[in-house]
Length: 288
Image 1 (cartoon, rainbow, N blue to C red):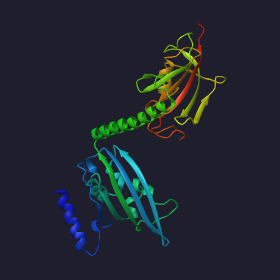
Image 2 (image 1 turned 60 degrees about the vertical axis):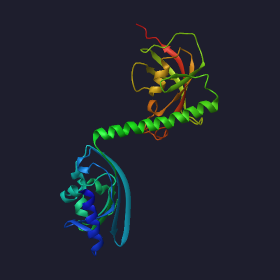
Image 3 (image 1 turned 45 degrees about the vertical axis):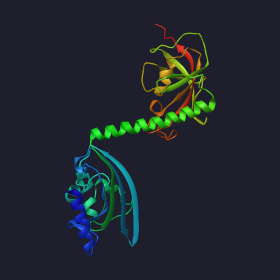
Image 4 (image 1 turned 90 degrees about the vertical axis):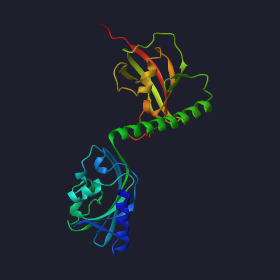
């Protein structure tokens, strides 16, 4: 039924002197790409949207492009009621061009894509090209995310395996879950316990050897191993396998390192496996 409606819309547009069909007094649209999604925007919990805008200011054509992701949204954030209702009927894969007055989207989420520093009147026309690349329910999105994580991890593990073969480390490494590690300096002294306070030194690098972070033994990091978020999980996990004075090389996939978003300062890109050369400088004994 939906395909038939769009087919009729296309025929009407083809027979009309205008490519656009009217949605309301200040909104018209034309179909650019017909999607095959089975869930509408109004039914979805997650949207992945590509937007491009075109406006004219003092005779100059201004263009802007953007992308954003929405979860647990309200369709009213797209603009006035008529536009929101029309957009709520679209499905994944649909791409629509709307011709609207600026007042239609003023102060809406779409307004952020109008060029900064340009002052538009409410009656000025704005061309909106909107494509929905992802329209999903919460359950579908969680399944999609899990699949993407598994796919990303598989790619990372291939990179890690290539590194291990290239460096000839296959017979020297111990595996703990998705972590690989080897002790580069062993010590038979006291073993680290989960509740210990430690002084730790480490050097973090990419698989190509480029160093991006270093903490020296002269100015170590002090931490309690039972407290979270002091070091990345991959390091914290292997510290429990070490003795005081030992050093260890750890190969860490991103979900145990800096994650799908990378480091907060942008040094480590998303989904990037790393190396960590770690030393337990001292197990600190707190006097009673």
